Image (spheres, helix red, strand yellow):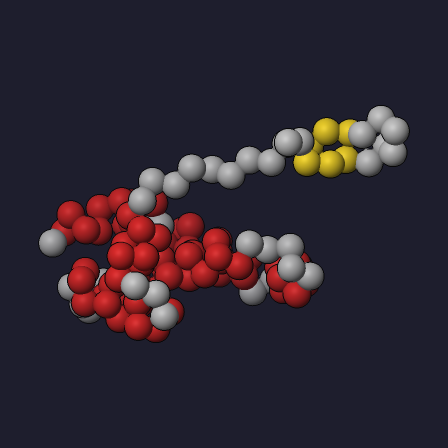
Length: 107
């Protein structure tokens, strides 16, 4: 059963979680969230990873996954993907439009 927890524990260390807590409680983050500039799915996934880490202190991996699935109205397989898949970094490339002088997303 410990194999379920290897990647999550290493990546989501206590220091990293404290950093997220500080960011999520900041006024800037709240303002960006209200303006729709924060990826809500990525935010939810971080919360799920944090909750999983806490639940694993008292529950088996599958029990923790089941509890999170119920809480967040997701399937157990969706929770497992959030926790254990290797994630590619999202990148956005911008270019300056010479006619308008504004930046835009490259296609």
